[in-house]
Length: 60
Image (cartoon, rainbow, N blue to C red):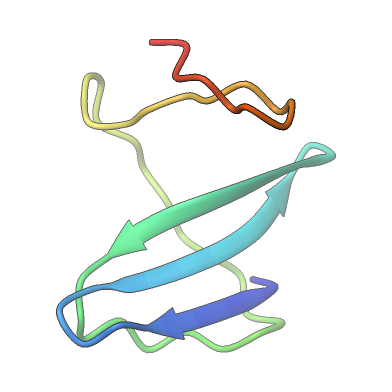
């Protein structure tokens, strides 16, 4: 975990995996801190992939 943003109704967690940066939108009770390991499972159809260029269009 690199950055944790507590937004009230959700928590945005920024992390790196295999050299790529990602952001996970998690529940408001999430208790993570920078440096923590993020246990993560992804449900098919429950995620979005965006291009890494400046425009960042959605790819799926």
